[in-house]
Length: 172
Image 1: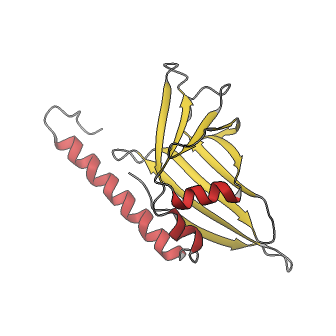
Image 2 (image 1 turned 30 degrees about the horizontal axis):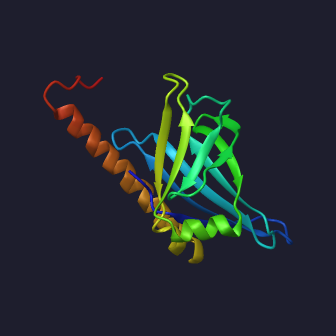
């Protein structure tokens, strides 16, 4: 279950504060809403450098880091910079070339190694709606709030459906 690519911009309180924009997308498990992959491109007005942050669930092996592949292109390798309760994060420099690949691409594959099984984990992030979000205006916060409410409602409905299936564990 994926959120659409969404652009959010904010400006600090200082008089000379620059606007910072984030364009991101999340993939979540449909039965409980747990985030399994997140991608966010961050950029600040007037700065040439842009950062791509990829988040994967906790439980991945830290040492090999992760790989990111756009369509069938060359893999980019990155090390995890931090792990937080939401997952482990790696950062990549987001060049104009990479942003161009995102705009034209169909899919980004994020690869990491499971700490439990030692096997490779591949997580897909669809790209077709990236260009529209990235090049377009920021999303209204009310729209984002409505999407969040709908996602929570959808997850609650799925959980109820799963509980009503024969052989499902009784609710606690």
